[in-house]
Length: 236
Image (cartoon, rainbow, N blue to C red; front, side, top):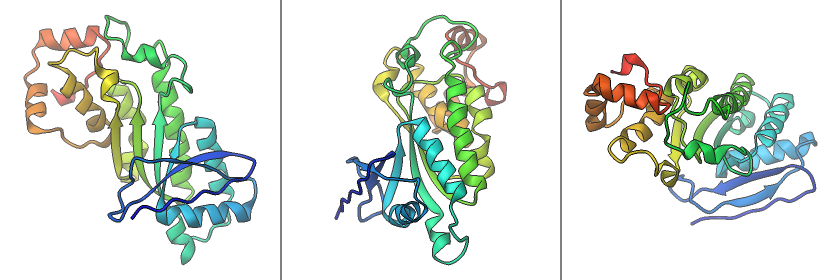
């Protein structure tokens, strides 16, 4: 059975989702306001959230605020504090209300040098990963869902900027908005979408997609390159 709770004060806004009986977050989300400037209030928030909720951040500024409070917290590293340091978070990236050039990332067109460069997409992604790094190095354990509202097809860049997740063996799930990939040619779409998770986590794709990747001709690779896709040569 799903349970819903809300805590409201007058400062920072966070979002979280309740978990169902299997521990999987349902789709329903609740807006929760929490005053993180108060140490006691922040510890209460962690105690409540660590057991029952996935914290969903749609704002980079709020994610940074959470990191700063997590670093400053006097949360003990053993006993009850250890359990409170295990968190499930969702990073809601490339939202149109947070990243003004987000709609441009949907375009499928010849572009140089790489998809997302003109919009500083990788710089934006790196900022989120820097906050993740700060939380991990402060002694917290994370399960991370990255929700990509828009495509990001610079796979070399994504992989390089996701090293913190692999170094700390962070369990990662990738949630893509399929509609935002509609301009990508259908033949390549499943492959290019699957490569987002593969480059971030290091996990293999489905066999048919791995085979398609291996079978790409030089002409196909050049075509994808001209449209901004950056595929590591080691994947071929």
